[in-house]
Structure formats: C-alpha cells, structure tokens
View 1 (cartoon, helix red, strand yellow):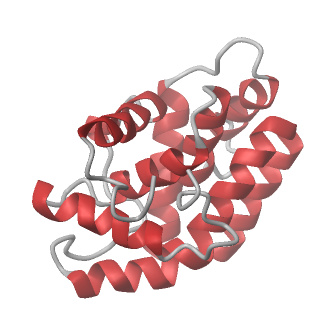
View 2: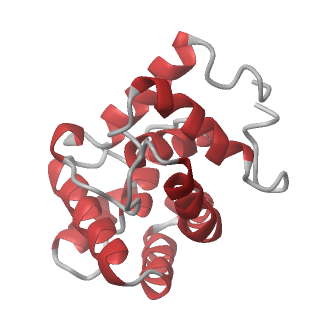
Length: 186
C-alpha cells in the first residue's frame, strides 16, 4: 500500500472499520478519546497529531502489539508507562474508553496475556488506556499492525465528515517516522 493508495480503496476502508468494530465492540457508545478539538479543523488535527499521536500513541501502539504477544506483565508495563506520560482530560478519557472496551468483550480462548490483562483493567490493577486495550485485542485477533494504527486514528476522528475522515487518517499515518512506519511497506 503506497501513500497514494492508502485509503483510496473501499476494501481498505472497510477493513479498517471492521478492525475498529472488532476491537472496540462498543464503538457506537464511545466518547472522546485523546483528540480534543474540532475534527474538521486541520489546525486541531495537526496539533493532536504532533502533540499526542506521534510522541505517545504510536510508540504505545507498537509496544502494546508486541507486548500482547509476549505476556501479561509486558502488557501491564506498557499500560503503566503511557499512564505516566498522559495527563488531564486526555488521560482520563483514554482510561475511560479503554475500560469500556475491556469490560465489553472477553479475550479469545488461549490468549493468556489478554485473558489476564482485561480482568486486571476491570479490577483497577492496570490503567486500561484505550490504545493498549484496543491494540492488545487486535494482536489477539492477529490483525495487521498498520491497519490497527489506522483503526485507532479512525476512532479518534470518527466524528469527522466522511470527506475529512480518510484524508485526516492518512495525514497522521504518513507522519509516522519510516523506522516505525510499516504502513509504507505494507
């Protein structure tokens, strides 16, 4: 998928939506997550992209994806790390949304890390940030990481008009540094 074709295909868009629905079954009832502002405003989107998405969410998404395959302790460590980095309403919304997702679905049988992690979020032993919960679920369902990243951005901007949504997602994804961006090679 090259940068010009990232979201031009309906199949890719449908797959991103499918992953969002699979990993956040309560999609219709989710509130704001970490994006604050007007999703129609390029200034607001770029401010969020540069202040939250690139420095915090991208690293936590990649770390969560890997941690979910390694084990429970690693997943909790990623969750606590992002908890120490985010603050205020952004952190509160992220935890509330992650908890809502965690409470809405069970882990697939045999996914030991997720089977232990989701109850830990429910008991308040792990913060349950949305990016961690969502990505851990996506890893358990063996979803491709580039599309998982796109699905998380989709969730952040889901209040955008259709005409603004896909270009906004692509803009965010194209800013991920090449060393971390498997979207360019996918």
